[in-house]
Length: 76
Image (cartoon, rainbow, N blue to C red; front, side):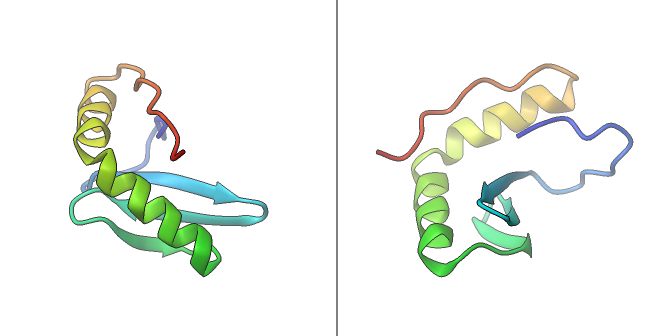
């Protein structure tokens, strides 16, 4: 999650990158809203997002006030 200066953000989301593939995922509900990842990696990102949904929403809230989001643990 990162601040995109000047970009409209009406829906809470985060970005995921795997090799050359990029995707944008909405937080509630968890769904790919732009781009795409290979199927296996996309399922892993979706599972991670489900586990960390509350943290993602909190980090999104910080960004809306111009504050840096905190680090969220990776899927292990």
